[in-house]
Length: 431
Image 1: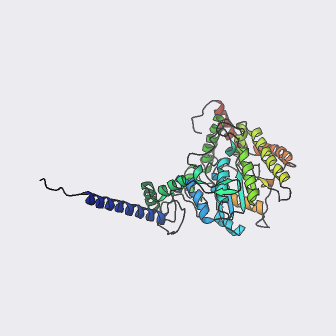
Image 2: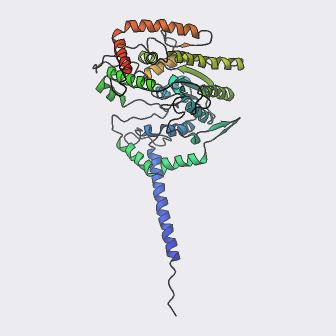
């Protein structure tokens, strides 16, 4: 009779339990570390200077951060737009003015479709009673993709009829794993701790504002004039290479203006006050639109925006009309002189470069739109546009542009040189 073999099944089972317990412990420890360090600033349960107060890795996943951060804050006022809004409006300061929590829900490169979806997501919180949407001409272009690579539709809440539903369980679960229980999450936490003393580290405030901490080092080294030329050349190349349209395409089956309609409709249905404004592009950017032959399209876009709002006013005549503020004109802010290339001492007051304005401009926009300071003098900066006055405003812009070009011969020569290089086909070179 052969000897009975020992039964190792229980030993293997115990070993498996131990392995699973160790693995679960590691996951729990990782989750706790990531929750406390909070590299993306989603919860901000603990904020310690020198440990995790600065969020230098926030840039890597802004679309995820702002999908969930708005739910945690439950703001009364939400700002929507792209990077021009994100770096131009300190929502924390505006909270004092508005008398409620203001959240900067702007996303770098956001299209009008993405802005609509993030408004839906914010409306699901139930606390939002005021939305300020910054309209960017370029974000309506249906020749570009409808969403950016980091955009995940499934993580956002959605309105179906009169019912608001949360994001999908699948995408939410993936986000939780990615942020709290992944090796990447631990690496982000470690990087957050190690870069607290990095003077060039970017961050986001608890209210979604990008204070552009890293930019002074960039601009001080090259000078504003050099940056303006580089950014203008880059913009001209993009406009030269890409078609421009608001009409339906394969990527945008319904066109782009329909999403502004949806923004308006959602705000009316949910009782959310809506204010619209068009960015104050620097004069060099307005000139770039002319150089690219897009000025007629730009004017038609303004007409289309005003027409959509006018149609809503007809449907909702008993409600306050939705204002459209136009800052994309030649005015004292957008005409700020650009230093010559090589000047590394002059600091511009209003702009980082031709398309991104500083927080000082965001403050002026708020003052202009909401009369927060009775002593504020707009001096031609910003005006409301309607069907009744738009054509007159557009005609006045031609005179303002002529004066701008006459008064800036040196700057116009620099722009003209870039336009001539475009004609020569030098698209791969830098200015």
